[in-house]
Image 1 (cartoon, rainbow, N blue to C red):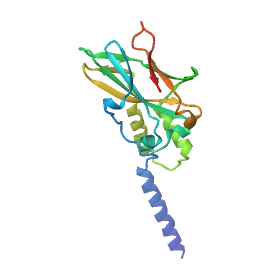
Image 2: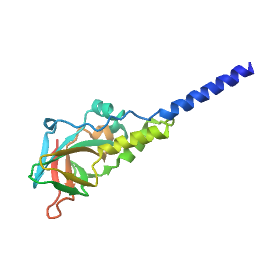
Image 3: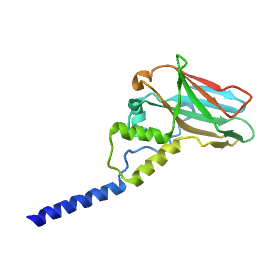
Image 4: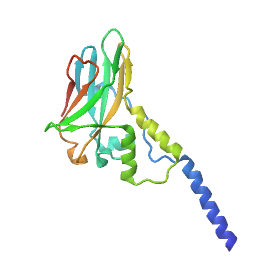
Length: 194
């Protein structure tokens, strides 16, 4: 009987270690590029047309990120930069800010912090280090690089995550997206997100 218990414990330990070697905390989809017609709001600065879409659908967020981001106060905005000029455009050190209808600033949240919030909210404890790194890399893939060159006629999409105090209750509100940093002579580019 002792041998049976010992073998059972060893089998369970082996099974747990095998599962933890490949288990990721979430199944986050790789970056999704939306068709241009999905973006309903846009503005232009110079040769760059910026379009934005507030991802308000909980089901879509769940499909993409394997979790309801609004429940842990994260609001994703998908943004597209399109170069309508005849030469490449360099966009460096873009700064993003979201304002609600009262003018309150909602700062961006890094992909790493979004994943940390998601893990904390859902209470996941058992996942592999490699699985965590893979999910973290997928989240980072949604972000814009600090230095970005967009070729003439090309576009680049990504998601900026914003801190949304009040979570789900605030998602239906109107917001203004502000983007600054690439043209120091002009103020921020503003896009209304009804």
